[in-house]
Amino acid sequence: MGLMSNYSVLWDVNTEKWIVRRHGSVKKSDAFATQKEAIDRAKDLAKKSGGSVNVKNKDGKVRANVGKANKKVKK
Image 1: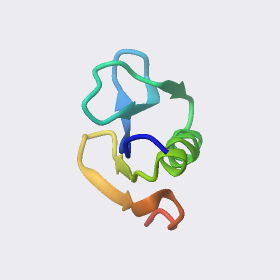
Image 2: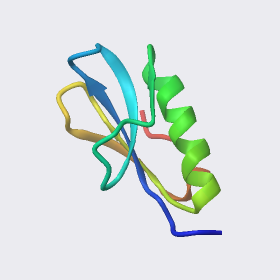
Image 3: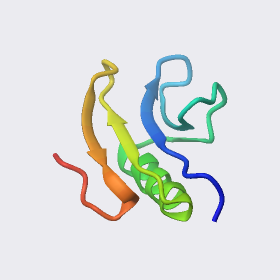
């Protein structure tokens, strides 16, 4: 396994979609119509690298952190 990568799920106001972004990257990995789809994708990516997922709401505030990508996201 390579370096651990952590991911964020956030709202993109320009495209009006939920995006997945690797921490430290300016490029988005994927864009989705729903936050759930974006969270599922981020969890899959984080699981492969042993990382975690940081979920933000539309205002950019953190609403949940998913460690090691196998824990449930808080609602």
